[in-house]
Image (cartoon, rainbow, N blue to C red):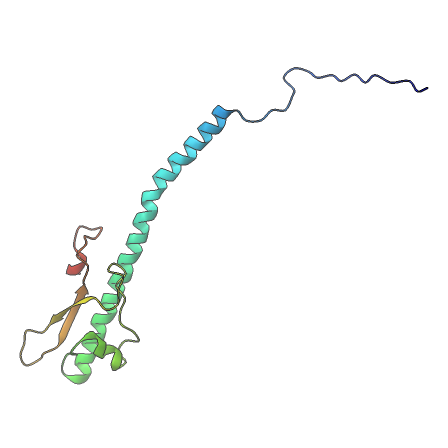
Length: 137
């Protein structure tokens, strides 16, 4: 018959590995939530700033195309679609605020001698981050 050996296991108090308590996990989640709530407005404003930047660039390019059209032909285009037809623009400019490429506010010439579109603005009536309205740009 075999003899059974007794194995002594020394478990010292305080040396047992333990996990995180519920309070510790709650504090960590609270800190993460606080940081996320502070970062969210900055992310939202950065998206709006990017849209405003695209709108400004599209307005500048389109206005330059209108000026080039006038310099080449001696009169303004009837509409902005004419700029695409005559290859002054590849496509109609996109308004990221109104989320459309067909809704533009076209400013017509007041001169009877030179009719046509002399400027465009956004069709959006919203207020920009700087306090002005997109339709005034």
